[in-house]
Every structure is written in C-alpha cells, then in structure tokens.
Image (cartoon, rainbow, N blue to C red; front, side, top):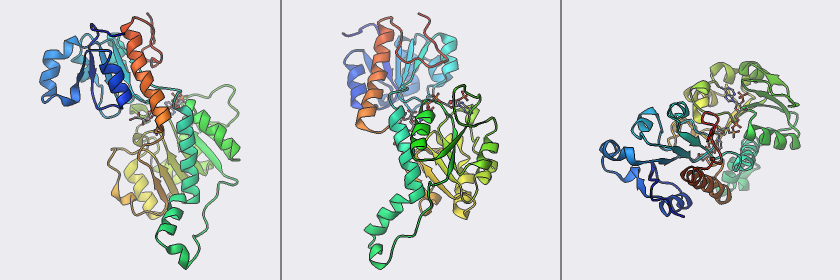
Length: 321
Ligand code: NAP
Ligand code: 8YV
C-alpha cells in the first residue's frame, strides 16, 4: 500500500530497510541531501506529515516548529533524548521509538563489555598479536567473583542486565528516581550512596537534561581505584573530562564505554590507557536487532498514516485516537 497524501521527511541517512520501507510507500524527501536545509524547510516544511529520524539529528522545537502539519516523529533507537517529545506533545504530534526489540541485544553487550573490561580481553588479544606471549604470560586480571554491581536505570535493559548478572554470581543494587515494587535488589535513592558500596557501576538510564553528568566526580571517587564503570547508556550521563582524568591517574579503576559525549569523537586521552575498553556505540548493532528496530520505525509511520494507533509511542505522547 502507498500513501500519496502522507509526505515524509527523512532527517539523516538511515539503514536500507528504513530508506526503502519509507521511500517505497510515502512521497519522501531526504533533508540531509538538501543544499539549503533552512530554505527548504521554510518553503516545503508545511507539506510533511511524517518525520523519520535518528541519533544524528536533533528533532528539537525549532525543527518541529518548521513542520506545522506534522503527525508523527518516528525515531530510530529506544533512547529519544534528541527528540523534544514535550514540544511534540504540545502540538499533538506522536513520537515513537524502538523499545523492547533491542533489550536483550544491549543487555548481552553490556555483560560482554563488563567481562571484557574486568578480564581485559581486548588487551589479551593485542598481547598475542604483538608477539608478547612468546616472552611471558599475560598479567593476571581483576575478577567478577564476590563483586557487587549497582545499576543506574533498572528499566527494560537494566532488568535484562540484572538477570544476566545474577547468572554470573554478581550481587546487585539499583538507583532510579523511584523504588520499584517486586524488585529483589536493594534500592538506593542516592546514586552517590550506591556508588560507595558497589564495585561496578552499570549505567543504563536515558540521556537528556535530567541525567546530564549525574555520574560526577563524587560518584566516580566513591567508585574509586578498584571500581569499574560500564556505560552503555549515553555519554552525557557521565562527566567525561573528569572520568578521563581519573582513569589516567588511577583514581578510577577501569571503564568499559560503548557511548561518548560527542560521538563519533572519543577523547584521545583514552586511546593509550590500559584500563579502558572502548566500543563504537554497538549495543544494539546486530543485523537481526537493527532490522527489528528499523521495521518498527517504518511500521509506526504506516500506522499513523492509516489512522491506527502507533506500535510504540513514547510516554510523553500517548495515543488518544
Ligand atoms: P527504560 O525502560 O525507560 O528504563 C530507563 C530506566 O532509567 C528506568 O528504570 C528509570 O527509572 C531510570 N531513569 C530514568 N530517568 C532517570 C533519572 N533522571 N535518574 C535516574 N534514573 C532514571 O529504558 P531502556 O529501554 O532500558 O533504555 C535505557 C537507555 O539505554 C535508553 O534511553 C538509551 O539511551 C540507552 N540505550 C543505549 C544503547 C546502546 O547502543 N548503547 C542501546 C539501547 C538503549 P525511574 O523512572 O524510576 O527513574
Ligand atoms: C542505537 C541506541 O545504536 O536505541 C538506542 O537508544 O542508542 C542504539 O540502539 C542508536 O539509536 C542508533 O543510532
């Protein structure tokens, strides 16, 4: 089915499944190919009913304001910190994201990154490739045995991380804005107080203003020289310059980082450090899971174009028909 009366604007290059899924059904324009985007939006903005977007472009109040007939912002990824969902809600625009389909993939990656950081797997691989095993054994590593992990953000992914961590014998605690019923792990209303009693801090809460740099110097100092930070959430949750300084000095023990403040730019001071494992934001990045996410992006636009309820609206824009 095609939707001639539902023009869609695509803000950034997206995976082929999304580009083909959208462009084969909807009259579509690639905003990122427009020579003068501002002039284009000024003249053509009013005709678009759908916006398809991702982590590379902010769907802020300014962009939304230039699309007066918009009905849906379909965003790739469960995190939608770059979408101004409150501005969209004020205009009656539905915002959708891609939750659930990536939960297990990201949780797998989080545990993989924790083990890689603790047991220094990338460093051990490099050790062989550099021929250093011929001259002696790889140094003994830290361990997960007897460790406690605090989870910052015990949501969908946080709970999937917790299930896996229990299987690895870790003791658990969590911090969020609210204590959750029926959760067996100790709750800490204060992130700092939790950081004081855990060995590992697993960061998997949303980005945005309310979590900006909440993993600050005091929290990192509480984690300390024997502590490990794992961040699979957003770089914005951690005070990155402080984290880099503390990793370099040994004031923070180790870090496994899938996300950074200014991706794809990663602080070069991290490159030479032996106590960090760096990943290029690959939490959900399997072909299988990215296809599931991409299909949701397309299916949400189709639902709104057909006047049906979206599959995955964000809480700020509940479907009211
Ligand atoms: P979710 O189900 O909404 O869970 C978010 C959790 O964070 C909730 O437990 C929430 O608990 C807590 N939280 C929210 N605001 C908070 C605040 N201000 N302070 C402390 N805790 C707060 O989300 P999810 O599906 O698990 O995804 C979580 C995040 O992971 C996404 O937003 C995204 O940024 C990130 N992510 C990263 C990758 C990657 O590739 N690395 C992939 C997928 C997702 P309360 O409401 O009780 O505070
Ligand atoms: C994606 C993510 O890599 O879902 C999220 O919030 O961070 C990841 O799954 C990202 O959205 C794509 O750029």
